Structure formats: C-alpha cells, structure tokens
Image (tube, rainbow, N blue to C red; front, side, top):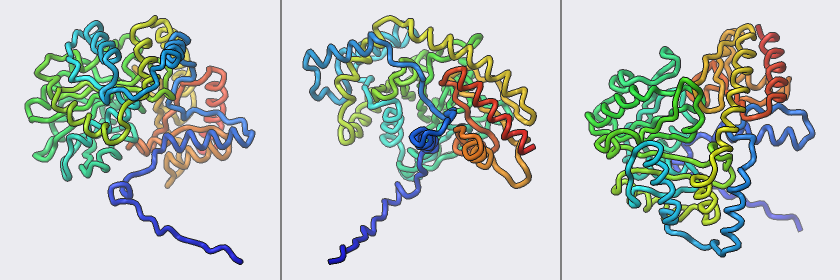
Length: 399
C-alpha cells in the first residue's frame, strides 16, 4: 500500500513571516557543513571567542551540580547572581542598582528581546544606528514596531548625538545602542554617549545599551558602561549584558539586564512566559565569573590585540580593500566596494570567498552596510593568515 503524503499547509504568523533569518547563524552553519564534509575551511564568520571557558568557572558549575543546584530559580535569577552583578557595576562603574532592577536572562540576546517587546507598541519607531547587529531590527519587527535606521558611514560608523537628534520623530520611542559595535568594532566616546542619553531624556525616549563586548576595548579607548551616567538618565536606560564574550561562555546561555524597577517588572512577565529562568548551573558559573580571578579576560584581550594589529595591516595591504581601525570587540569591517565589478554586491564577494576559497565571512548588507564584510579575528593567528591569503586571491581575481 502506497504511503499517503500529507501537507501541513503551515503558514507562519505575520510577525514571524516578516522576520529575516539570522545571517550570522547562517555563516556558522555554512562553516560547519564544510568542516563535516572534510573541507579545509577558514571560518572568519564566528561571533564567539575561540578560547575555552576558564577552568574556575567550569569548576563552579560542576560544584553547583554536585550540591544539587539543578532546580528552577526565580525568574529574575538567584539572589547570589543578582548581588554579584550589582556589586560589579558599583565597583567598576559607580552605579547603584537595587535587586528589583536586575534580572538574569538566557543570554544577552534575551535581555534585548525582553526590553524591546515589553516596551514597543505597534507602530512605535525604534532608532537603530547602522551598521547594526542583525537581530536588532528583527526583534523590532516581532514587536510590530518600525525600525528607523541612522546612517553613520560618513562619520566612520561612529554615532553622534546630532545624528540621533535629526532622526527623532513624534513616533520615536526607543533607541538601541551598541558600543563596542558588532559588526564595526567602533566605540562611541563616553562624552558623546552622555549627550545621546541626554537627548533621549529631553524627548521622553528610552534606550537599550547592548554592552556584550564591554570588556574588549583597545587603548586609548577605555572600558565604559552607560550605567555610569547619573540616575536621572539611567531611569530611561536598559543595560543588556552578557557573559558570552568576556568569559568565553557562549554555550552557557546566560546574560542579564539592568533597568528601572517598572521596566524590569514588565520584562519579567515576558521571560516568565517564555524561558522562565536562566539555567541554575549557568548562573552558578556566572557568579564565579564575576567574583573570581579576571586573568583570563586580560589574556584574551592581549591576544585579540595582537591579532587585530596583524589583521588590520594585512587587510590594508590588499588592493581595493579599506579597513578602518576598530576600537573594540573582535571584528574588522573592511570596505570591499573597490573590489567589485559593476553590478556586483558584497554578497557576491562573500559567495566567491566561500565557493572558490572555502573561507567564511559575513556580508555587511546583513548589518545594513552593503559593500562591507565582517571578519572575525576570534580565531588563531595561523587561520587568520591563511584567510587573508584567500581573501587576497579573491580580491585580485575581481579587480
């Protein structure tokens, strides 16, 4: 008897149908498929450290499991983790937060999701500077808001208060900030960031500051958090933080948010009906990350500094490529427009790298910057050197 074929006739909701798939995850999947096939792939698309989670953090997680800390926790996280986050911000940034203003999340991405969907109504406008992390506009779409993009290329991809002021309309409700930036690595100077926050207060707006790469900045830039601003400005601010990059804990899925008590209460509703709580074991690991030795952070930053210096010099020696110097994160964001033939896009460049040279980078168009590519140097110097050789071959083939 022949098998009967069924069709689900599935149609996603309008909200989800309008969302785009994550290009950064697609790049990771492409690299993994090539590795599985035995291809010598150079993966410069990864947005995660190539370092292992420090041993003391793993030990803390193991001890938590042995102690039976494997149950649900409060939605906002354990008291111990909340206290560790509060103490870190007080110690490092002079910011005083209460427990009802702090919550643990399943990664920094959920902190941003919670903040946006708990605030935005249909039709509200959200200001997003270009280039942006690919998830920002998709969360706004899910919330049925409208993304309004701020062009920053003329200022080397550094946002200014004047740019923000020009973009505000009567429907603007929120701005999403990201410094150090993914994908550009640019850092907004603290004085300019303060002016931006003052403008949000003047116009009765809110701000989400994605500080995922908080600790990875290169001199003369300094580690800085928007939480450092006076309390009147912080009333309209949500800090979205993560342990993923700073402590090489991407797979642990633990982050946090800091916001006023009313906003936090709304975010707890969202999380209470989605993921409930960050995993108890990851929270125990996160406590040790904050309270334990910080040597691993300095070690990673030193190695990123070495790779960054080599990579920027090498990329700028390739005819047709121009790469400004990033002050933070672990990405280079070169302009490849002079490497393209008439009618070609940065996506064509990315695909040629993938197909002809088995090298993975991410198309800048996914970040709102056609003509650029994102290169991650969260990989070994040997792999970077091989990747640049392959990029050079493609660039010279196109010119």
